Length: 278
Ligand code: SAH
Image (tube, rainbow, N blue to C red; front, side):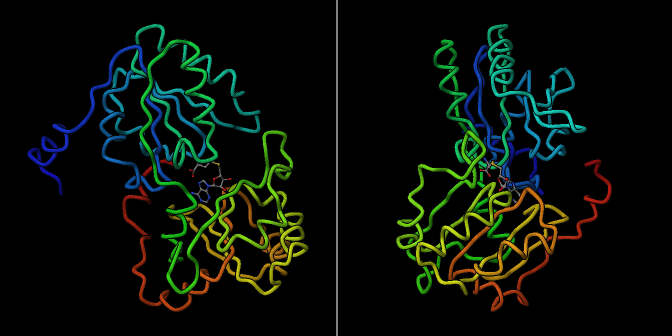
């Protein structure tokens, strides 16, 4: 375990959180251990923490007793706070002189609207710092024992979102070019349109028997991993009732999983996870 002198070593290198500023912190894909040390130190300094639905609530154990935690996600069927409201809340607290920490799932700048938020902060004359996080499309693959790249399978990797700001398949993606040019494809938010996405990729020449894996609730105690093929993928989602949040990964690297699975140490069950409120 870390002792006081270890913590002091880390503390020496950590930036100080100035009042009236906003830090965007990536919380990582889920497991509490996958935040960065810098993000953890920031959490301790913050006066106001504004966190998203996919952020593990276990992180709230670190915030100071006098700090305020504000939930900015979907709850109990109510619509999620609109992006404009979230930005207004962030700016309001920063203008009141608070150290505002915006805690976001994965990495703030990977399909996480972090860019929109720093843009709004700049317009409002507010200083910010972005602390990266492990994105679900990388951390989730690792916890599913799928190497994101290997020399034998893929020399490139493509990340995409399955829906754009309007909620439909992104029209800005050239699906034919993607089907031909991309090796491994890692997809976020793509379950809803999985049927159309797979059709577009096959129409673009992608092999129907290409391996596809789904990683749901990656890095969390209820993580699930499934493997199928591009041809079967859309029906497979329905048949297995695969619901968000899930990462979809398509490519030859997925097959490596079978070869190593028997040797991968299990992350769970962990005794602490049966005691924590979710
Ligand atoms: N900024 C985040 C992504 C936010 S978009 C990041 O860098 O990871 C939300 C999507 O991320 C989900 O629909 C899902 O596709 C993916 N995702 C986030 N957390 C996940 C998890 N624990 N397991 C599987 N997918 C996850």
